[in-house]
Image 1 (cartoon, rainbow, N blue to C red):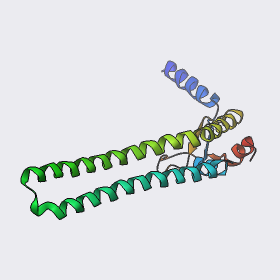
Image 2: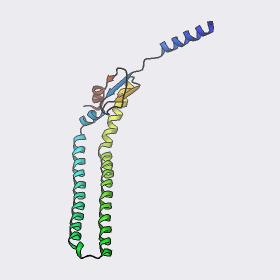
Image 3: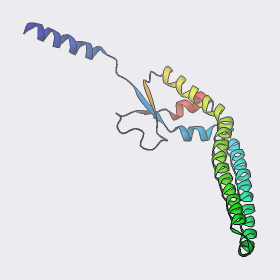
Image 4: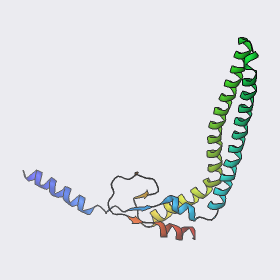
Amino acid sequence: MLRHLLLAASFLLAVGVLPAQKYGHLNFGNLLATIPGTEAAEAELSAYNDELVEEGERMVAALRARVAEIEAMVEDLPPVELDKYRAEIEQGRREIAAYEQEVGQKLEARRRELLGPLVAEARAAVQTVARENGYELVFDTSQFNTVLFARESDDLMELVRKQLGL
């Protein structure tokens, strides 16, 4: 019994001696928006997106025009020719679908290229502030529903902005 009491007392002492963990939070998206260069990168990304969409719209318009041509001839076509044109139209649809996927990949690659250095700079500043101020964990509050519970924490936005010289 005495052994259990000593064990419990030593556990309580050990827990009492542990340093309190410090948690912080900031909205990383808002931080990124304040970094010089982000607005220009977003504008360039938007222009690139518009170019890609325009190309996709040209592809769709060309396919629609071809479908209209084929529909005008459909009455006079033998079944073998009709099957050939159906395959041609289906190939055009597949190419458009593949292009849509390619657009997403191209946009993501350009986003990483344009915003990657800015994100890296912001992350480095967050890490520096967290280390210098003894934070164990920093939550990104820009992501909806990523933290279901957290004890009160400090907003590090101003400290990180200061670290970035903003």
